[in-house]
Image (cartoon, rainbow, N blue to C red; front, side):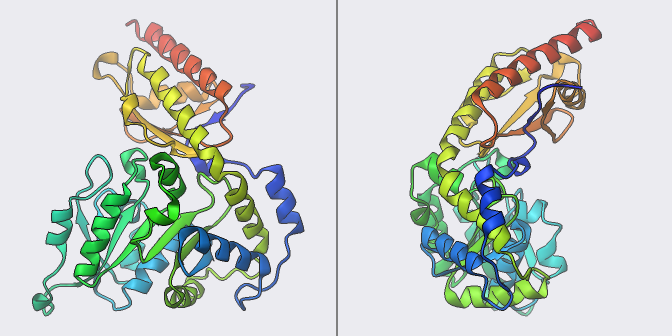
Length: 364
């Protein structure tokens, strides 16, 4: 049994803080499906205000929030949405927009920084003259920060440019902002300005912000009215949700300010790993924590080191260090507010000891 555990698999592994537990225990509640839960209303109004949008809606998960948003913007089955080929919506949400919504995804290649080339986005928009044969483009989706690109931030200038393109063709723009606060902190841009061009935004409470459950989608009053109906259809109406929303309110008030420290610790770890023989990583590529409390670091094992990433991960687990295996040569590390500075030093020592031990066993 190891005496110390440091979980770097995701920023979703955090435990509710004492202040969250207290707020949840004392939360005033009512039936949210009927629209009367006061704590839910407070959270939704607060998030909408922060994001500079008219209204908000609590949903059980980020995946449901993205699905609802796409379905609202693409009400007609056979509509098409332009998404990144390496985006969370396209890769990691079970193809829900297609299987449930009948929405066709048209992918554009994500660059290493998480963006899509503006010219390629425009080229992917269907010509209305071909509507007899083609799906109808109705929506563009961006992701900020971009998880599969290592927590990269999309700049406000880029988002504005995509927003202008959407307006040019009478399309809507949705941002999967599961970690939008990370992007705001890293870029030094107020979050409402960062999402100004978007028609809807998904914000996750249970990633970098550290709440146990839930996400919020924000947009216009008309958008949220439609979203509320879709949420009910998908089984997302959960009655006395104030218990969950209370933790979300604490997360907004107490944990957004901790994200900068998460990013700093992620960069410290990346710089330390860079010094260890056998690992390959570019510390300069670390922009957030991927979160977040999240910062995600992507690292690889050098080809000639003679071991797999799976072996390394299992050996680290024996020392109480948990990372997320992605391939045989790559794993992901994600920071959150419950990883301390002393944890960073412990992680580095465990990596060094693990690699040295494997090297001895392999006779290298």
